[in-house]
Amino acid sequence: MNNERSVLISKERIDKYIEKLGLEKAVNIDVEQIKENLKTKFIGQKIYAFQEVDSTNTVAKFLAGSGIEEGTIVIARSQIKGKGRRGKKWESPLGGIWLSIILRPEISPQQAALITLGAGVAVTKAIRKFDVDARIKWPNDVLVDDKKIAGILTEANSKSRKLEYVVVGIGIDSNLDSSSISKKSKIKATTLKEELKREINETNLISTLLEEFEDVYKDFENKDFEEILYKWRNLSQTIGSYVVIEQLFGEVLKGYVVGINNGGSLILELNTGELKKIISGESHIAEISKFENFDEDL
Ligand code: BTN
Image (cartoon, rainbow, N blue to C red):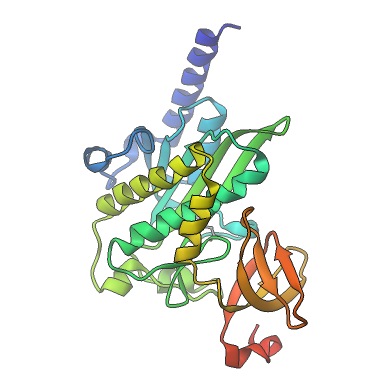
């Protein structure tokens, strides 16, 4: 099959899928306004906006698998089955920013973890432009005063050890009340509306986020991974803190965070003085005074 024909078939596939999801029902997201403000070359130059979807990541993965251009954005006012990390549900009512970015980076699947760190930098910098003191908690939570304000879920698809595409899903709790999101989870949450005591202009936040994202993504394209790590370290709340780490299979570790290495792994100094590399897991920042009794605090 020649390329032209395969592109045509994909376009038809995409159009049918989008029609089924009801693109025309997307209200309240002013795509034209986002584009008007946007100073990017490719991130967000194509935007699919929906009123409600299961998950923007799911839609983005379909579009990515159908050959859509890099930088395409999927955004929704609400999600029915919003996905969080480690199989958790992500509460996504009206009033938040729920979007996914499709990427086709020429890096190895191992380096994909750095994209999440880069996304954390972009989200944090965008929120800080609204005068809210956001910082990153490893690996990819964005916090304000220890309360979660945004999360990132990166999903990648690789074939024969090569990355086909990466979908970066970003959720920012913007114009909503934390009571509508933190009831079911044990996590302490906040929102931009609560921090600023007013609603923010979401169109501006989306454009700012997309610009910050393209900026950090340029570092990937230039293979300047050190630059991403440098930016991440400067915005990190985790480095220099005592933490409790919950690993995937239930192992719990506690220690002092010395830094992150060039693969994005956390370097933890245990009580014994041993340095331990943590590739994945969930970190909880502990106050030093509480740290000795962390079993009770968990
Ligand atoms: C986390 O902190 O657990 C990650 C949350 C990621 C949520 C976003 S909202 C947009 C995108 N679509 C999803 O279903 N999840 C991500």
